[in-house]
Amino acid sequence: MSRKKGDQGTSRPAWYEAGLAHVWLPYAQMKTVRAPLPVARTHGSRIVLCDGRELIDGIASWWTACHGYNHPYIRNAVEHQLALMPHIMFGGLAHEQALTLARRLAGSLPADLTRVFFSESGSVAVEIAMKMAVQFWLNQGVGKRKKFLAFRGGYHGDTTGAMAVCDSEDGMHARFRDLLPEHYIVELPQSEESAEAFARCLERHAEELAGIVVEPLVQGAGGMRFHTPLALQRLRAAADRYQLLLIFDEIFTGFGRTGSLFACEAAGVVPDIMTLSKALTGGTLPLAVTVARDKVFDAFWSDDPTRALVHGPTFMGNALACAAANASLDLFEREPRLRQVANIAAALAQGLAPCRGLPGVKAVRVKGAIGVVELDRVDDLEAMRARFVEEGVFVRPFGSIIYLTPALTIGEDELASLTAAVTKVVSEAG
View 1 (cartoon, rainbow, N blue to C red):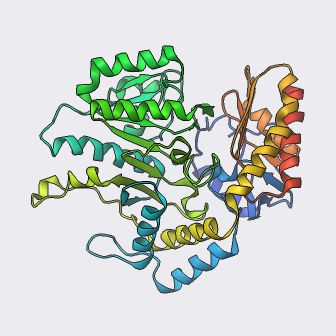
View 2: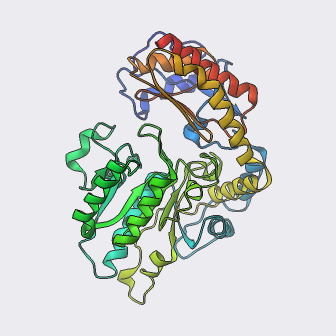
View 3: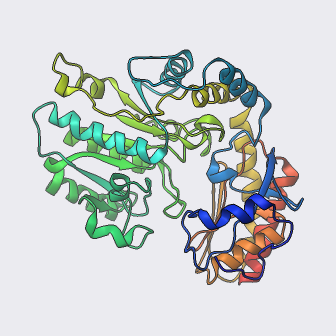
């Protein structure tokens, strides 16, 4: 890694200098990327660096820390579970935290989304959803339904199957396009024109399709693109017409981020399979779930062992992670998170509004606790990220997108500082 202006070369602890040469960082060209910021601790919506500086976190560690960092209630739950049992394998054994979490999730999700399969990451949860969908048809003697319909601007993870249903045309996985399983990618059916194109694709290929995969209401890492509930209602109607499984990837949108506890609620649409992760444990420990409706589960229920779902991540249902998730659900029940989301939405709309008139700004949009300023282009992402640090905030633009996804518990003054920093940096970029 090169040292560029803005790298903080002083006050680096010994562990940082000794270990940095041995890590491979995410989404980074290691030869040219700026050195990462060494972090000493976190609290609330703050990241404390080893040199003593505090940054207001504008993205809640990829929107996982929904209750803020170091929430004492979640910490106490994890500490209590650690003293009892940190982990047992989920094959042939079970424990209270996982079964309680499965029951609670089934009770929180709409309709008959009642069967919870655990894993450790969102990308793997998507892989499991796709595997479920393909085997759903195989178990019924339909072997040709192996492909999926997904959407431009979508992002579902970095593992092979998940990459294959991302929009790889000009996205981060474009170089893998010829190596990935073939699926069909179209525009979300929002306009009449895109709805017609969507319908034509289904007419041609429905018999090949196992299901439809979508991020409901917001396509996150593919560009923070918003869409209306109408698009999701069209997907549900089409899935029913062609007897396809509808998969909602709520890894980004779940747990209040868009304004309701789950994005599907705002559309009045129930998917056949849903994936959840990110904020599931309040940003404390890795955990993901793939939740299926009864009709999906019933296709696997048999005396024939070959009809079983043969999948089993080593750390699935980890007791510490499930304890954190149960504590996080407690906080959603006891504290006014959705009201806080509404307040954040109003503050983001007001705070980012001045960006609309600035040169180089293509769009400003807000949905729930998500604020986006889309630029015509960003010539130097690394430099822009460094400017945000200089302003005392941690904001990590990608492509031409500057976005805020703060903790749902962020203070009013902290949120105002974030929006002011975005306005200032955008004004300089123009």
